[in-house]
Image (cartoon, rainbow, N blue to C red):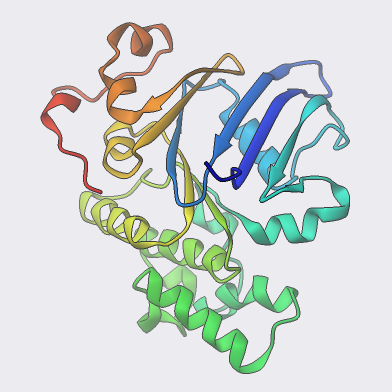
Length: 255
């Protein structure tokens, strides 16, 4: 198999207050995979994600060990600009990513910071908005959009950077059923490696063939999402609960 596009080896991290959040995590994701990162609150999922594009590292005030690389490029200070282009993180609250006066300005912000101008910048903006079905809102102020529309624009701000890996933090949270389905259709259509942090286990089954379970700062399971969700002792041991009445055995995951 080809080298992983995301390669995490022996990652350990303790915050400055001494709290140890990660204990020797290994995670290898190959190009084109869609992987769900599951686990209870406090498992270390956010800490792991913040290492993937260098927001956190052993030299960012904490104490850590191990290594992270993206397509062979180590995640370290000298490479951060390129790493943050390659790894796009979509945060749970779209208002953390939308701060300009128009949708166009928000989506253009990242590529413009890379020095992209003119027709190429316009192309990137419109292509990213087309990918999330929001092109007709290009001149709308973000605060005039619904929550679901803002989340889609937040995804577009990252897609405009043409990342190799798209990392989504709780993408289905606070969405109504129609918006949740529309976002799932969009995510399925993207030609990008996907890592999705979620407590929404049916969404993980729908979108991600593979799931990694993080608990207590360590990987405790890595396999097909169906097998993980159907493993009742594993689910119970790590405080993962399916919605009432949901049985993964009755679901046929879409490709």
